[in-house]
Length: 94
Image (tube, one colour):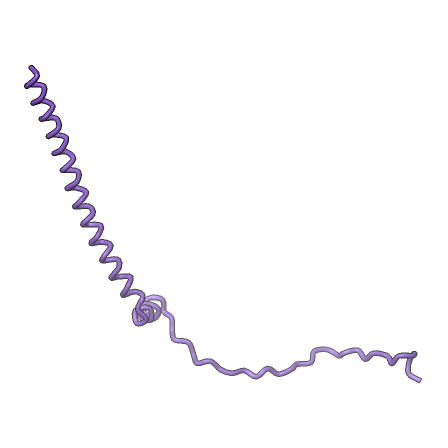
């Protein structure tokens, strides 16, 4: 009787090990797939960060154009209205 119980316990442990190994194998496959996706995304990120690619997307997809060269603008003072003239100290004009 004891031998049968030991054999049943051993079989149960083996079944648990096989089930656990299947889970590990499935997780290994998922990890490998996730790593491939991550590597692909890293390559895409590197390509998209390049200045040439940024410019291509800006012009082709977004319709942007290069900026015109900067121009210097000289400010001109503009007088708006009339400034009041203060009366001299000591009363009004003599």
